[in-house]
Image 1 (cartoon, rainbow, N blue to C red):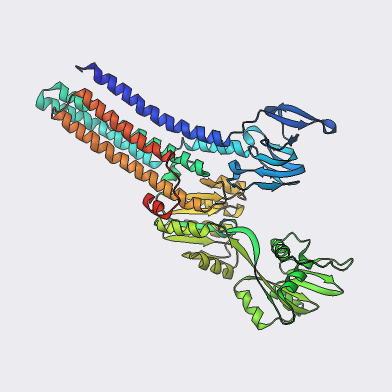
Image 2: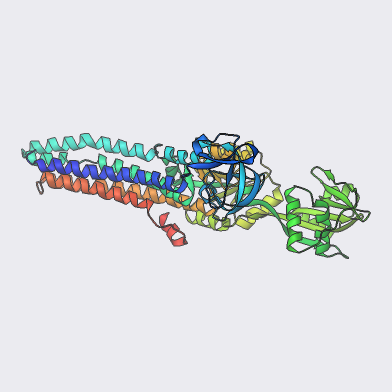
Length: 547
């Protein structure tokens, strides 16, 4: 090479592009650590006789008791045994609203106790805490290669002999070493490899910013090709907390009578339906009567509950339970059994009324379904173990394509595999019963603070918040990432191809060719890195553009 400056340009600009890729990767890791780091050196450990001592966090062991005061970060995962307060768990669960915590509640390392003070029995420390596992998952995710990276490597490597061949042909035809060298200083490897890796690093970092752990860059690529999204109902589509939908009283009674009598029977029950009735009584400021002295609560599993009030029997339960106890029901009220989860309330062998219970659709779910459709996902399906009438009503409200009711865990896995025959499938769930389906999906997603450890282990993506709109945002992000990678492919081939042609024609020297080639590499790497800093897309037109 006649001009040693070209070698300097190649070395310098190649280093810059590689540094940009490393910088993006490190920024992703830095962001993860800055948001999730524990940043606590000491903790207050309880010694004998309740005396507190200040010790290094690394000296805390499972089974110890630690005290956390207002404004402090909780240093361990554990369960509260004394005290109460308000914990900010946004870094762990994604929930921006602080949670009221008291005896028996679990708390997590990295959460901040905004008010109160608590004593916690240590269950997990160090690398076993939820916080450490999240950080580890995100760091490991960057090392998992997507298929597009293998394609990029293959294409780039196949271009090497092509470049050498063209350089030889040019030399034999022109007998000009400068023209041949101009072609050799230009290659396709750097631009394609570095920009692809950078885009995927940035995408994982961007997802982490928004509260989603993507366990590998291959899942970014798979999400960009989705045809079907399958949603579990309870805890995913719905909040998993039943609420009173409607109260109908029979002649001679009013709605307050129905709730008052139902609450008298359900007062000490831990069943979710009891919670819904008690909440309704509180909302209506209803004074709940006291049961008869020594009156027992009689529970018939799967049917209902009964007790005694003023010497008369109060019964709360299903239509079947009423029929067994020979309590007459009217035709007007019986038809509700076909549409809702209905609880019948009777007093002294007389039907007082009915309460329809419905699991409230999670806030943002309507918008999530709407956005997924605009991103070209045609099939949105619901799976549930609930009865068919409830499933049909839920599917109607959300305008889903179809639903499968009364599904066991093995049934859910079967449906995921069946839909997978026609295209890529995303399965979204949160419970143990969803784990087989999550494992069989192309992309398994767990969502919400109530997700189980088994479901999280089986999934490919963990959304730490209860915000279902993250589903459409992740799909949009993945498609944007793949579009950026395609842009980089085109730009790399176009710019370097033109540079090779001009070099062969002797229009510019090797040093200019090297500068153009490396400038193009830096450009496509920057194009990839911008994914990490793009503003969050929230309106519909932006979502459509990203698709």
